[in-house]
Image 1 (cartoon, rainbow, N blue to C red):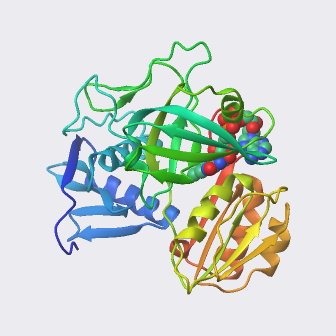
Image 2 (tube, protein in one colour):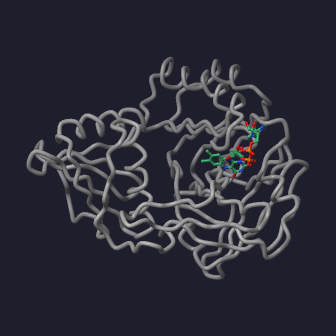
Length: 339
Ligand SMILES: Cc1cc2nc3c(=O)[nH]c(=O)nc-3n(C[C@H](O)[C@H](O)[C@H](O)COP(=O)(O)OP(=O)(O)OC[C@H]3O[C@@H](n4cnc5c(N)ncnc54)[C@H](O)[C@@H]3O)c2cc1C
């Protein structure tokens, strides 16, 4: 049941699938990702995601899929997520959205920015400063975005909207997920901290990037910042910028245990009176055995190394998915393109 008014921005798409099919898909997604599921008298079902929602309702013998949000860019992110998830469960169904978007325009959750500078902030970290007029939409509790790297030959064609309001990528551009480590929406700059690892295209780009080079930004996206009285968090270097944002956002009363699982220890974490830092390189297995009860858990590391933590938190400790964010930030086995 809904309490209060729905978010103001809305897009809908008719779908020739029975409502029961979409209801089952939404329930599966809620269970899989620990999302809040709502039901409107058995005729509509929706998921709450980052202040917005996406769901489906009965429409004759078919259904209407809808997304609602408090801003155009988050609405668009939800529409795109709906397309991707639907394609996973029932491939071949095209969603023709009604909504405010214009064919040919840039997607609302995409903008261009320019490299303002690159600074070394640790033996294996580069801080990339980006400036652009769309940067302010990334100043939220949702701390992640995708950086879209230009083609090395400089002849980059950026994405635009199709007539059905979906994103068309003329070039297959590399767009890995990163974290906003600092942002000033008023003057239009943001920073992201890039862990330098062998063969990485983003660290290669950041190492050579000259001021003025254009990149794309997609987002915001990903999980938000957990806030509970006793937090246990950790991850390898790819997670250090996110851990840093989580620490900085806690109230002074929060007790926060931070487990640094990467090899390096010179990343500039913010101070916090309730913070304890433990450096345990590659220690996911040992940490999993030692984990004790807390109110909230947040871990991100390499995909296979996450498994013992998942087993300990959801299995041994019986923590509900809503209270534990456990994310694979990269994959050792992967030779492909993106996380
Ligand atoms: C939500 C989210 C937020 C993230 N935030 C950050 C962030 O703020 N800073 C950051 O540095 N990373 C972050 N990451 C991780 C980052 O997206 C991946 O490391 C990604 O693969 C980097 O892309 P690339 O272009 O450098 O490497 P690619 O060119 O895509 O990959 C090249 C090779 O490097 C390997 N590889 C990828 N990451 C590592 C690693 N850490 N160590 C060793 N080998 C690796 C790949 O498996 C691949 O074989 C985040 C990931 C997610 C999902």
